[in-house]
Length: 473
Image (tube, rainbow, N blue to C red):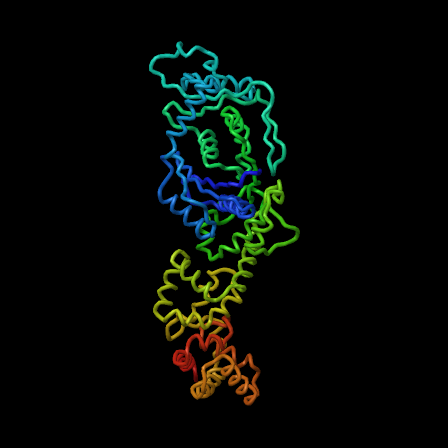
């Protein structure tokens, strides 16, 4: 009987969640969901100097925002140091590891000699076969695993294929430092085994670690997990994604106004495919995702495609959802706190009247926020250059006539207001644009905005008439 699938995401809290890490978490989450398995979270916080509680909170916050729910409580690696040392003692007792008393100076000399000889294995400790009774006094040993010297170590990777390393090219990896701290490769193996992880899905930058970790698994007699090393994300120019390409941290995308569903859809398509499908619901992703669909080549991040996809999801969303997400995002959005204060001042219900129109034009929540400018503007409105040109003497006279008609309007609704303006244009012999553009300029201070009648409803009768009156001749 096949074991239930258990995947894990294991970030280090030395910074916030990188967008590449977010994709790794997503792949693990999707595979667990697809197979009806379990998705676990481990915080690899053994680097005590660089691991910060605020980074842990930021990583957890980003995963929650992406709606990647993990099973159980997060496991913290540092808290398991006693367990790691216990397993080291087991390896020593089995003769699968040894105490190494090489000093830093001796190690440096070995590395320099190996470099001069162009030997790919820099350190071959003499303490592997030396009697521990010869140990120098006062030197705390590191513990090294006895890597096999003959044969080969094979990693059957679900993405990269069969990866073979000649054992003669493997050094005796340190598994416990002289200060008693476990090394990364060793702690990962012990934790994955104890957590019951069946599938290790991670970035291709860890592929070199897979053979080293396989040696540790074999020395302990533990069953190997399935490895799947996912290609890295590159920038549009083909170079490894970096700050010069744009946003790096997942929280930056949240502050830029992207929706979790859009980012999930986009990230899963970076390196995984399902035919020619581009837009896929989360339920479809869960149904279709499998490791076989992951490609070997690095994926290129395309910010324009992400924005287009995000715009699609904004248009498909319910206004109530966008309102809630906008409210949550404004505090961390550039200029957002000021917009939030403005909406608090005029009342969020004012936004509701114009939100569907703003959503039709937006690619991000930042665009939606920017579209609220006319709502928050206070009289007298500051006109931009194009708007000022629209409001010539004739246009102001038109506004004065319209103001009288609007004041008498029985209902303040989009259809009724549009019918009123069309009737006025027909009676006065003007084109609709000759009437609507000056009206737009008076109401917003700009010539670019959502539909003018939606604007009037959003502003309300009193404010709209006041703004028109300010510009009427």
